[in-house]
Image 1 (cartoon, rainbow, N blue to C red):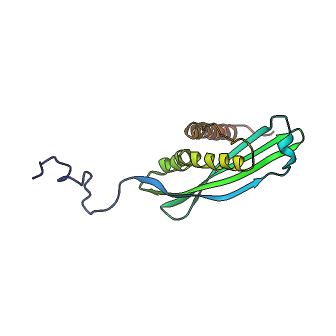
Image 2: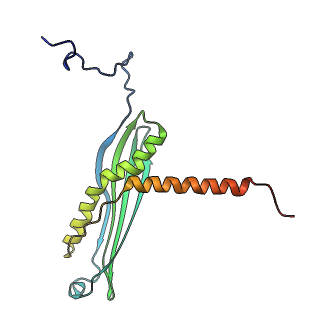
Image 3: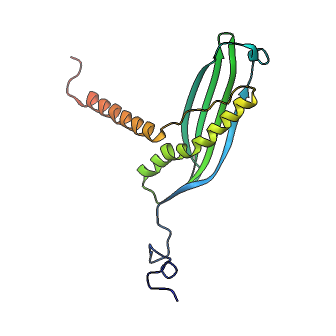
Amino acid sequence: MADEGDVLTNLDTQSSGNGADNRPTAGFISQYIKDLSVENPNAPGSFQWQDAPQIDLQFNIGANPVNDEVNEVELKINVTATCEQGPVYVIELLYAGLVGIRNLPDEQAHMFLFAEAPRILFPFARRVVADATRDLGYQPLMIDPIDFNGLYMQRLQQKQQEEAAAGSAGGGPGGDA
């Protein structure tokens, strides 16, 4: 027989009188490669080039609502490697995930979509880029980890400063005489 405080006798730790699912929830439903372009424009000549390529890495994050509780988060990564002789390779990856969010305040949902979700997607997108460069015949490109939470907070502060500057520039007395 189970004791009074046993897990088996008290499965409903957050009781809701009407049985409604009102607890905050966020999680991934699926993740996938939405678009992948890989170019090796100067092969096989580029395999003979001796200078180390310059790597240009750019990334962007987007979120698009699918319905009231599901958003598609996109992590776009563009990599261009060039040498003096020309481009070595170009990789454009759009890695996406379907994220379900329910009962989260808008501020927390926004942070999850633009900071936490990309952090979770990144290692998988990083592997796709590494595999693509290896499959092109080069050393796998291992992209350094990215602090998406730090970038999110930095962008949020930057936006607040821009709004404050715009508010003080337009709100002061004066005008043209």
